Length: 354
Ligand SMILES: Nc1nc2c(ncn2[C@@H]2O[C@H](COP(=O)(O)OP(=O)(O)O)[C@@H](O)[C@H]2O)c(=O)[nH]1
Ligand SMILES: [Mg+2]
Image: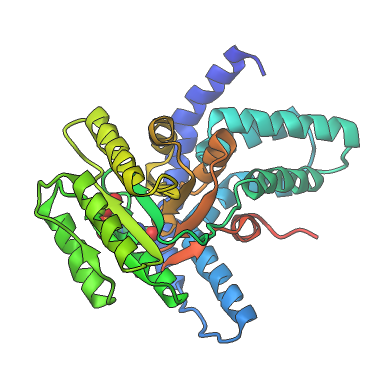
């Protein structure tokens, strides 16, 4: 598709379609609330896995509605022609999949369609689903806690994405798995952040290492690791600030934390996780780029899937950065954290086809 054509397409998308989908979406969001069912209480291992799937599916309802209004309509079109691919391109971009990733997928699909002489749009849809699954499959690499004791996890991200909540969710999860866990309150920028961690740590009986507000975050991390080493703690999770005087200041502070941690254990931190709020849509791309450049991220956690129709951004993130997605956040409760599974994600937002 040439640039002129694309520009026209975008101006059209920006005016008409966005408005239309917003209206549709609002209508559906209201229906969502009414139709929300409680999850079944299931017991066996297989049932627990099913329960995770239902939980993810439930949290992706808004994204699914958005897909149903756009991408999933391809399924029911009559012919494979240029109009189909243009329609698909528009709706993919609207679904936060991003221009680059969308282009790549569409080009691949057009080639597929030519080569395989597809008969109907349903076959195109099937290949689309397959291609999009492949993108997520590549980043499906669950976090394995190695035998390093303590295994140090540094949690980073911009303000309000859910770092502290996620640090607690992780702590609770590993504790339930039978590991000893410690938290470090290295967001010393806001007094409330330290308190938030201390209160919740106490509630779940997880030790929290903290200093006064305004203390050096690297010193907090150092103290925490020293304590975790002496107490033979299995997992140390370091919560950090998301807002400082400016971005550069924040990144420098985070780099200093990693340097100081290395003084006690050269292989630590073993995992640097960027927490990303899915509601931020395309802005998450810039955020990831910025943090990855400075810190060499080893994992992502995408939060608030339950609060947005922008879940499609996961395709752009996976395609552009290839950073493993460790978990996804599906709500505010301490148990609302699911190990990322690409098949479950795909099956939550696409039609089922045989
Ligand atoms: N709906 C929803 N809310 C979340 C999720 N994760 C975090 N939150 C909420 O996001 C807000 C900010 O979280 P917080 O952990 O303080 O963010 P931080 O500034 O990055 O530490 C809180 O109100 C959390 O309850 C999630 O997966 N889903
Ligand atoms: Mg916080």
